[in-house]
Length: 234
Ligand SMILES: [Zn+2]
Image (cartoon, rainbow, N blue to C red; front, side):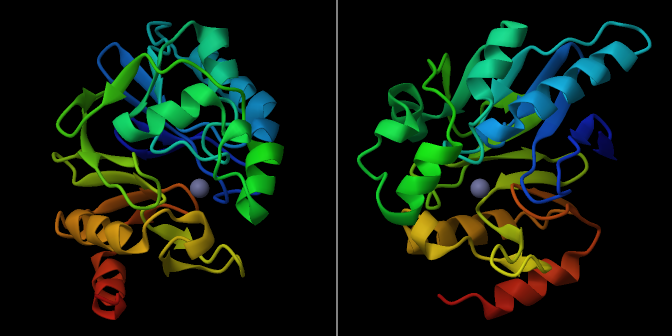
């Protein structure tokens, strides 16, 4: 567990920073954001167990699990986490249907994406709340950021300009593994033009802390995003 900012932790992954999950908290509300592939289930459950065991006041408990988007590398352990902690699953309105049907049964499950959907995805699970722009989740405001998936959402905390943006942007090159800002790969993105509009919407917030689905968090490096935006095609 790595503390990124007050009440925001990144769960340790293996290898580190490749597929990220986060914990956010506000008062009694503690929410797991994203849940890796299904092969990460044991690691995520172990990490959460240790985190709550080490809470010195023993007051923290998981209250919900939310997804930036319903892709197989983000919802793999979702059902296991919700079952283990008895917490509800939340996601963006337009990603709820694939979550409830199961990604392995998706009509889009063709080609490479289809293979990953079948191999990595976790089971279907009921979405208890369909998050919408403006909803508050553990101190973060929900922002619609569709394009990578139809119902992709991001989480924004104005007080310290902290943004959890899922796969609207990748913090690494998924092909080479090298760090740096990249658009998510086209084969895995539902609507590239719409995702670029979401990138512009989020960049306009001028975030100081950016937490990605893939890649190490970018902390206090505004020039990296500015450089990227200059290169982004219209
Ligand atoms: Zn992803």
